Length: 357
Image (cartoon, rainbow, N blue to C red):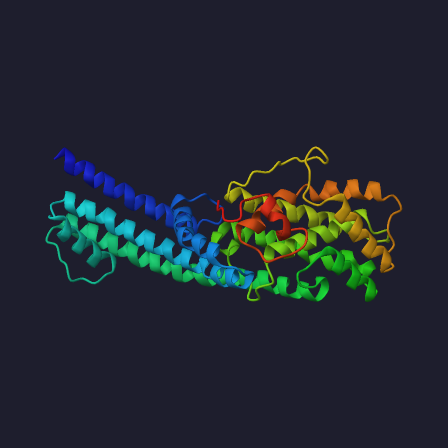
């Protein structure tokens, strides 16, 4: 009798934990560290990690990684269904549906609403109905979940696609400034960067609520939301610290702050370690002074006015970059972002080439 009670409680705990995981993943509008969801993504990585080791080119790695998020999402759903089936199987077994094969048959019939297995007591009917309701509920939630996630993906990618026109492919701060100079738009950089404050806010909300979005890759293999974020943040930082041109710097400051806060919130989901209150030079950045000087020379050769004291510009640029440097390159490594200067090209120094959260 006591053993049956323990078995029933175990099954009930499994079902409740699974249902709670589904609620956190599909309904709760905030980022949570759900163990079952992360387990499914880690399990999928056991297959995708070795496949990446066997690839020689980025194009092949990108094609493999394009399937990682969709496969992981389906694995999450399968994990929920299996756990619900096993949980109810234990409860049926504890209530006298024996052997285990009979309890498994009844649980599967109830979960998938097939109806070929029947019971003859009110209490077992209640269990059967509740399992069927959970099964239908998971399917209904998933049907509502996927369109919402893909709508967020579409809005994210619209801005990423448009960035290529301004900042090239892969996008860089230097290229954005050079193109703005050639098109006599340098004075409108604040206006050009201002919409990205809203983009960062939306990315933070959607990518912490819908974890798979972080791994969903752009339709074009040379684009990525994280390299776009890096280009925007670097452009804002260089405009504020390097370019000697009259402009309203408040939109740049707000965009920069929205950007590094969004990356930090996403990094928190994967327990990426970063200093929440960094100070340069005590906290170094992955950009070297030589790279910074080379970028400044490019801008000066194109006729862009720069501040005379580049030492001061470097200190101020690094002061902005240090706020997002670690999170930027770590997330770029995590999702295997395509090559982009000052972001994914140095992510190997922050996180192992085949590591996962």
